[in-house]
Length: 332
Ligand SMILES: [Zn+2]
Ligand SMILES: [Zn+2]
Image (cartoon, helix red, strand yellow):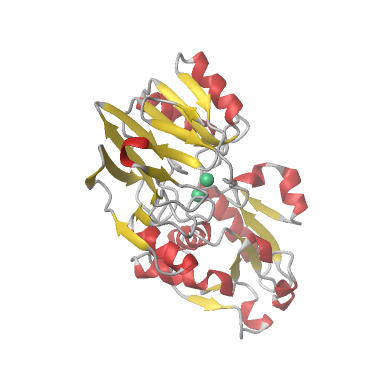
């Protein structure tokens, strides 16, 4: 255990907020958990009371069944123990939040996972200046610079139209990325039906129930090869090389992930069309955010910590790594 500030502790299973007796995104069941967003490595089942946005609670219910959850709206402030806590948008996935905490005149912000570029499925990241910024660093290396999303979507559409006898199978994380890709396609004028793997159906419905427009979607089950030719099919990354894909008409295999920047990762999954589309901040977004928030200290939770820590130190900002376990963003 490391005592960090005067009132926050870092443990392998999560960040503990002592004056509120609460844990942030704990990897073990806790009596009181504050959850930033619905991805499985941050939102786990089995907690006592969960404080999260209504969207995140709904996602947790899809995954783990009924929660004893208390919904908190963006920008609402509540007092827990001796801490004022507020959730503000993180721009990562539907319902994702940063957690802003104030105690005895000190403000600490936990970013959760975040990105700065626009995402049609959730509100944009809101910068909150703070004393201590606890940030993720999934893509915390200068080599990670994500291209414009629109140009990646155009590459996808170009490939689709190049051969109408084939389909393009896009591997995308089931929560967030899949729905974002669908919305980005709609924004680029693609209004044809989009086929989906059954594993993302409930999350598609959940997004729609929160008002995210996904257009016409069709289940691949029951569709013929001929019907799916010339169409886009969205599936979780695990289904790309699965026998399930044999039902598709000669698929061009694509994958939408920040990791597609690394050619070897694309090859490992037999990805023919790598699309560099991420729900995490790239190097420029991470450093731009730290510049903007002007914290006195930065604590780095997960990802590639070393380079970001070094960057902070060369910019006269104290920085340290928290050794939390259980976070993975491999499928981003
Ligand atoms: Zn996440
Ligand atoms: Zn994460």
